[in-house]
Length: 154
Image 1 (cartoon, one colour):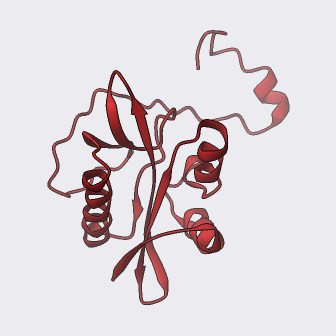
Image 2 (cartoon, one colour; image 1 turned 180 degrees about the vertical axis):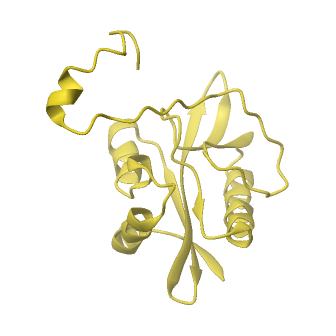
């Protein structure tokens, strides 16, 4: 197995893996990395694990930098989830080793993985953030009649 830093030439197979992974969401799509660069000037590191020629895992991440917090490698900033998608824990460990190398080489204080799944990679974990998931109604018409959430809910 090898872990590489995916580029635009890898976008198709990245997104194909994401499209078929049961824990994936829209924030895992490859196109977020170039968007963060274009809009905010943030450098992204999209890590892709390969077994032979088959994708076995992905980790989208973005380097944030601020005077208050310093440099932080985050997957994915501004969203509650969009972290690592992997076939198994061996892949998770390989991808997080590469993420740690990137963070160390670029002077990041820490790495923040916004995963919905827990992974046994030997890192300290904090679980203060919560994601709440609500099933959507079957039709658009039912959605417009959906009154359970107040206007300030997000």
